[in-house]
Length: 503
Length: 126
View 1 (cartoon, one colour):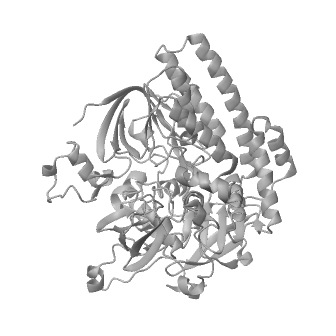
View 2 (view 1 turned 30 degrees about the vertical axis):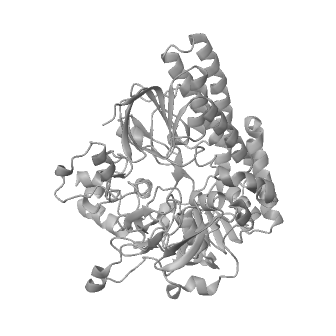
View 3 (view 1 turned 90 degrees about the vertical axis):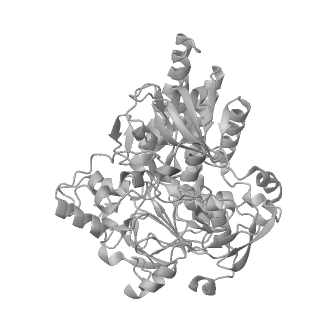
């Protein structure tokens, strides 16, 4: 086994928060290691077309020059400054365990241990799962998924798209896709058409976020010009198909969020995108034992933070959409605030200078927050999305657990909680580690049949937080082949999940 | 697949992507069918461009699954690649000569008479 690496600050996640933190930390001369799971830095919002493709792209194909738009350009500059800053960067790395400020990570199929003085968690967010009948059919994508295929791979996975969801990201994405030549049958937004008073509030609070507001108006113009059907107060109630999406059923909802039964309409579609908001990724904070609180906006259990982005576990800080979804500009300020704090604690930054820099970032963060809150008000809705699932709807995609099975367990056990669902039904024990079912499970609290289930307690966290290969651990001397009954060929891709250790 | 019959008129690639990738083609196969993709793109993207979206059967209900999150989180796009099971095709780059196969509905299922279901309403049910 190789000796542990050491550093002042280990940053997990190379999105806006992690990148901004790396630059700020390097300004104070800290020794920084940055881990990211993807091939390139940038995270989801700043994700880039692979470099070898980008340059010919911009030169030769004018109508694609806007792929990624302003944010991709902003991201590119940020990524380049991080590359030039002397940060040690490990892309395609998988941090799977965190204990205090020591982390374990798979880099290049080898386990690496890192003993950092401080750890900054900047894992970002992922699309909220929305279980509706047919959502497991091939051809159904998350907003982020469809966007990734279009933006980084040049593939639009359908000829007749229906986009459904909530919030400004849906609008942005629809406009991008329309610009690139996709045929969008409909964009259905669950919220009501924005009221003038709320729009005015957005405009008033946009001082720090003018570019975002301008983008938003641009999106609306683009969709209008192309005659894309954009319908408010509408949800997708089911997706139809045999082996692939063939159609989508949409329904209008009234002002109380109740589905209007005779408003049902069937649309022909071969790809559907579900983008009902984002969920913070909090699994590393949970496994490290940080105190958590339930975020009212997303329903996720996010780490409790002080004004310096510190968790209650000494040495662990967190920033960005992984602690509450506020968007890239806020994430970057949070990343800076965290890095400033670490530099101050390590005596690499004078106390007064630290306070000055902190104040600048904190002020900007407050401004971004005002804008985010105003935007969120515009898109607020009263639809019980969990209520769209029927008895046969699969809630846990990995283990094929349906709503009926969950309800049956809840009513027969009487005192169910998240952990008992796991042990009875294997919910959240598959390879996605609960990312696609835990948010739904939390949302089921109080639903018919779940009145007596205690769903407020988060599931007990376990490492590894992502599936890792047994072979990689064995090769690194972390697991002994003798521990397993069966002969294991370490060159195969057998995966070990925390869940398997539990059972 | 019903899908191919319906619509093969327009490519699923962005217009101009050929130029972007400098026409760096590779050939690979899915369930024995020869296909063409671009070097280094994700296997899932290449398959989608070739009208293939159904990549595996789920373990219990045997419902059809394909790429969903596109960023390596959900493990829905797992398929068998060059004999290795459960490869996440959305984050694994395509390489010349790759053999990709749909996963998990095996001979045992046929023996036991397992019929795939998908929990989704079909058009007839509407």
